[in-house]
Image (cartoon, rainbow, N blue to C red):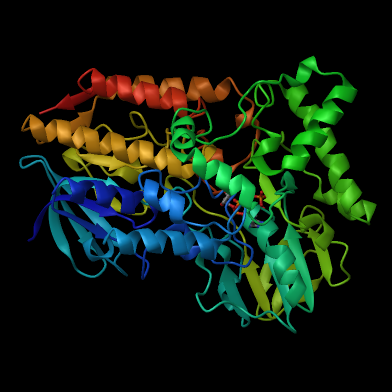
Length: 529
Ligand code: NA7
């Protein structure tokens, strides 16, 4: 059985950077990736309109300063093909592909306590042993298929936004259904509506959505950013959001109605998460959030002609931003088109999928294609779908049955030498993902170097430190209004999943400081052997 220093699972932004670091240190690391090539999220999510909601100049690696200068991002927020092109370029120029086995899914991982080694198995029959197992499997990588009766009976074309065909899909001349109105639906619906003869959108819950204000890259802004790139990277690394954005300096409740209107006109003009970044109280004071929400609703109503449809599109069940905020390009205007119909599933729930379409409580919708934009088993799904067995035969999936427990979002008691890059309990999805990925990869690399220098073969989170961390995570989340929403942040989108707030809410800067303090203190809270 081949023996390795480390196995890296996943060849997205995390896995590639992890591999780069390990190989630079001369370690013998092997990567496994289920897809045919690199890219992770950006490999799978090829649906029309798929786009990042962090700006491209900062949603990219910071460890390649020459590439920073050479690379041109054509838009403020790049579309999936551009991001994938960038990742592929990095994989090629850094010669990373040869360290990965593609079309190979890791299915099992067993820890041998006597040898301090993981034995890793794949669906292609590989068996390898490795000192360290690094799960770089992404936060939104296990697609969620809804449990609707008859789903497999449909005779037309079935798609999931998170598993989009590489050759693309032509909806011209077709009757199409989209189920779901989260970010993936909001990005794809305007594009699908342009092609399809008829589009039915099946909405269970409206999502808060603000204009992305995407545009072609402004050459002057690009020049200015590049002139100062290193400093900007440094700023992002030590910021709340992991990004070069204005941070927490305006308190909504201090503003009069007129002042707030002007302020929100300004940030709605900037678009996307700029409508959240500056506000100290948007996630801590529901009254402040309500005021922003009222503005958002007025904005939506001004974009949709039919007041009844506009009303359905205004999210009212959760404070704005407590489910991941969506950023749109002409989403609401799409409902002004004659071929687009919104179906309110609260009024007429789906009863079943039939051979020829979708049956709701009041009628049948005959369609040629159904697009499931129904999201992911977020943050834990990719980890618990692998049969990971630690000490004493403990199974990760079972240990996490009541919600994930770990220390720093990086290590789990009972599972030595296992690292989870952007695992639950770390800032990840509440920040610029690439910044959080880099922080984790660098921490893991530093930790492995430290262990190697001491001849240590094992690191494991203490149960007590883990308990304190989980308590701190919950207290931090409960000090905000995030838990008020039935979001994927809290596992509410997956039937039966424990209701635990998954990401770390105190921002990347504080988190980085906490992780660094643990490292500087000789990895306090971890048992080293
Ligand atoms: P999301 O944001 O989880 O959205 C999934 C959507 O699918 C949401 O509107 C759900 O409605 C809907 N859904 C899920 N199951 C059903 C069933 N059974 N019936 C009807 N509707 C259903 O996933 P996305 O892919 O859009 O975005 C995920 C993240 O990727 C996004 O936040 C960005 O960070 C990138 P519900 O709200 O549960 O009523």
